[in-house]
Length: 240
Image (cartoon, rainbow, N blue to C red; front, side, top):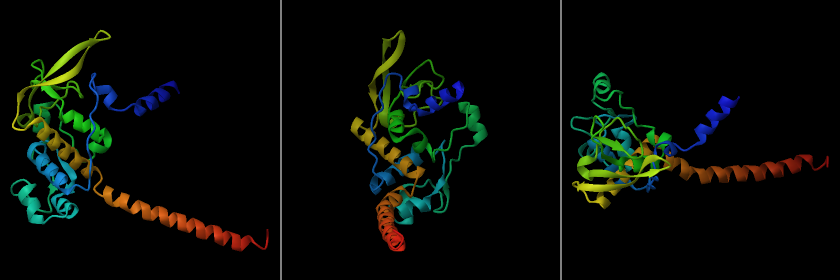
């Protein structure tokens, strides 16, 4: 019983609490009605993430329909070369090779935003820093000992970590941009936010539709409740 209680308590602790290393999570600006952000996020995801990570539950046709753009525009601006509109967003990386190179097969990211949270993803993608002690030369302030390189290093540039001793432990208190990338800090943050926005969409493509239908469902339940109450009074009036 004690072990079961411990497991339950652990599941209630936010995932970021295990991996923040002294760094707080930043808030992502998620807006699933911003079609331009979603399209740009999908484009950046294909360009920098799809090489290792699939989103196997999404087809390029879904993007065209949900973003309200022409199918050819999705193929031209988002999909990789030679991809078809009915193709799923699958990586071309061989799973055996990926495990040999990285030690583990890169996971599918279809549901990553639902499991980790948008704020965690936004902070994680912005928190890579140079660490010569790691095999890939980088580490992450949100996910220590991460087993992947920084996919956005060309855009972000090179960051270094500032450590402080807290309770006899070395924790990261700040990340400093040592060498800028091709984007300014504001442009990079916007691009990362677009990627996270797309991953939130990928986790539940019908979310906007579901939320918009919610008020009609609540109105129907309320109306049905009133009718049921009046009907009940009519049936039982002679008895009471």
